[in-house]
Structures are given as C-alpha cells and as structure tokens.
Image 1 (cartoon, rainbow, N blue to C red):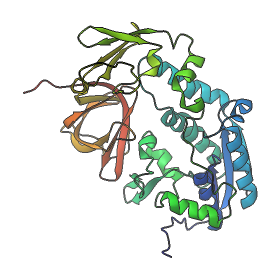
Image 2 (image 1 turned 135 degrees about the vertical axis):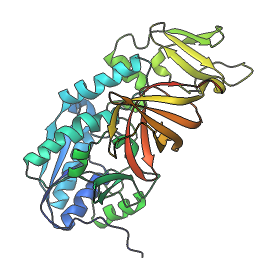
Image 3 (image 1 turned 60 degrees about the vertical axis):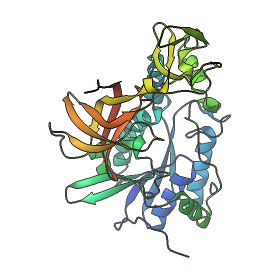
Length: 373
C-alpha cells in the first residue's frame, strides 16, 4: 500500500484544533496528537442547542457537538464548547437574511470563517498558549521566503479555498491545514485507522442554520415578508406568472420557474426586490464580462494599475475563468474576463488564483457586459 502524503509539524507543542464533529476535523486532531502535540479541541456552538439536536446533515449542530466530544475522549484530549450563538446570529445569520432580501445570493460559510471562526477562535487559541490553530479544511498552506501562501488542495474535488478567500495574512501565519495534501478517501482511511467513532459519518451538506436546505424558509423566519408574492416578467415586459417570494430565486436559475410553453429556455436574469419582480430572459441575457468586486482581501503582492492576469472563480462549483484584474481603489477591484460569464450574482464571491495559489478575493458588487468594439 502506498504511503499517503502527510503534513507534519516538527516542533511539538500546544495546538488548538477546531472540531466540528465531522470526519475531517477529527482526523486533524488525531494526526496532531499522533505527532506528539498537546492538542486542545474546541467546538463552537453557533445556534440553539435544543433545535440543533433535532437536526442532521449540518455542521455545528447538537449531534456534532456530541460527536466532537466522543472523538476527544477517544483521543484523550481536552475538549471545550464555546457558546457563540449570539455573535453568530448577529454577524452571520442577520447578514445572510439581509443579503437575500437585497436580491443577492450570499455565502454565509465565508462570513462565518471571516467574522467568527478565524477571528475569535484564533484569539482563543492564542489565549491558551497555542502555537497554531488547525482546521480540517482542504486547502494548503505553503511556506515561502516571503511568507505563507494559501494554495488549492491537492484533491481539487474537495478544495475549499473559495470559502477561505477572506483569510488575512496575519491569520494565515497562525493557521495550519493538515489535510490539504490528502484526498477524502485517504482521510477516511485514517479515521478508520485511528478508530474514530465518526469514521463512517456522512459529510455535512446543509448550511448549519438552514433546515433541509430551504434557504427561503430560513430567511422568512428571520425576515417576515420575505415570501411576499410578486410577478415573474420577461425582459420584454410580458408578465409570465407569479412567484411566492424573490428569495426563492437566484441569478442564472432555470429550474423551478414554472414557466412552460415558451419557445426558448428562460433564466432568471435580474431580481428587483423593491418591486418584488423576478425578471427572466434567454441565456444570452446573462452574459457578463466585467465584474466589480468589493471588500477585497488580498494575500499577494500589491496589485498594480497595469492589472494582473488571474483565474477567477465566480461560484464555488464553477471552474476558474481567465481575466485581467485591475485595482479600483478603496478596497475594490474590477475583473475583465476574456470570455463572457453566465449567472454572475451579487453577494457571491470572486476568488482570484495564480495557478494553485490563492491571491485573494472579494464580494461581487456589480456585473455588466461591455459594448462590442
């Protein structure tokens, strides 16, 4: 059997592991314990524990807290649960609801990493005297003469760098990702070898506070009126139907529109929250080749006015697309794509790569199609 790649840290000492109760973070803790580190496991309780116990298939739920505790007992490491429920609601859930109400498509997991896990948990780890904070994310941290860089995971099918673009250089200095060189199957093999009680546990699929993947219901619970009905209209002004809340729709959506009998496939092209309109049209109407990005988090050399050739991911499931990135001042940038992109939605992230290296990223603020020359 071929020995799988293994990230080792040669100076044993106290380390904190963010333990979600899943296979990945559990193996992370086991690997570091095996290497001789003084491992401390910390789990964040992010929402109501009573409700969480009834949930399955989501991270940071009640069962997951229980599972993290069982893993810690199996490994013989201390384990603490920190109550971040109020902070999580204010910093992540409220932002998620507001973003949907603006007609955007938010990514709450990025906000959670940015505003809770990689901010407050890092401070806690330092307070405990830890040399670093380790997580079970599939991403690589590469040391260079100029400092640490973030790179995509070896297993591109599991790569999570898109969700970690908001990590700062200071945070990256203190973070470690032991699974970045492993495939998921290798991680599960290790879980079995360590006899972890979560070895066969399925991966979480849902956002932790979104029951059964119903974003609309989650938003409606936070924002009464989110499911107010309105009209579905064509770009040419024709009223084609009715909807039960614009939060049920996202830019580029084709399925579930309930608009049969049209001569060509129709896609959601625009959302107008104030008028409660869902605007649809042909796929060609989705084309965008200039994307404005705000709240830039940058991990590379300063961006010059001449621009930089980059590959850009506009959604987590899309392949990176070639573009030139230009600074736009005040923490903003503009990506000009070589070819039109389709389904670009405000509220999503644009993450910039140079091959495997993560250069940075930001939030999509606007997109347009330049006029033909």
